[in-house]
Image (tube, rainbow, N blue to C red):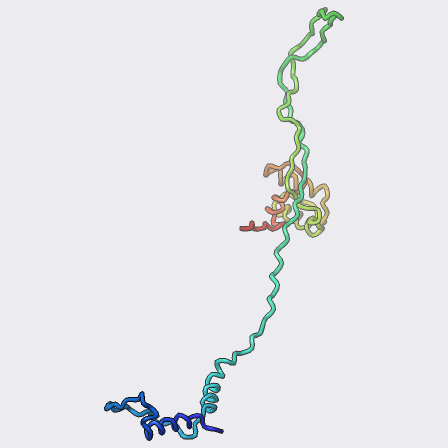
Length: 209
């Protein structure tokens, strides 16, 4: 392989032998320190090979392995809302008032021939008009036989149900539900969602945020 340092050495030798070849070079009395001589057999290719060998670990990086992203676990689906309605009858009370005994007799021209006749006695007065109560309830698909059996056991443990555990929402079960809910302000034999949660039959979902 041809040495690439030879032209530089020949040029330096020519400048020393023939000063006119380098007129711009001025002689100096200053003593310069001579660098250590390079090995005779070194070549640019060898230097480049050593540099490449030293940089190889830095340039060769480990292959990147892409791991496919795992799908996020599905969020629990929101529970379907179901509603129940309970008809609340009007509430009346008896008070003492005027009871009509005989209607008035009125002539065709509007003349009152005989005034009405009243007597004092008990009369009914509406205290609370008829209304409808709407509340959130357990959905039909939730009220499986296993669910109803758990309801019966929960009511029995609290002293509201004394029948057999049948898994059917029968008359004794609905009567027990009415008694349990009436003690808590809801006079209905339809199982409300609040009652189901208080008995531990339906979990309470945490609010987002």
